[in-house]
Length: 139
Ligand SMILES: [Zn+2]
Image (cartoon, rainbow, N blue to C red):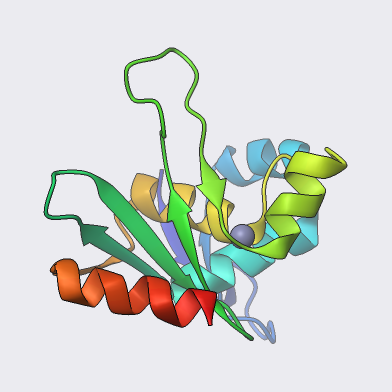
């Protein structure tokens, strides 16, 4: 998948998101609402997707939202065919889990796209940092 800035595709455009080109964007539009897709691309463009390698070998992500930060976990059951993923934001709980009105929230979509495009920010984390991260998100 190739990505370019929106302003390159559409000169004079007010937005400057990183967007996938070719038919990948059309495929994404068939699954996700335009506002969710653009919000996810905006998170990636603003380097809001942080990838942490946990001391016990798992990976987690933190996504900096506009009002709060959320933890995202991909492939909670790595040994199964289904790849359950989870975000700690209220939108995921309501839209994806309770009502089923959306497949996922913008944080989870941003994380999946960032992982696919290798457009995340990697940061080391130790147990104390992880405890502080959880404390911040729960307080
Ligand atoms: Zn979320």
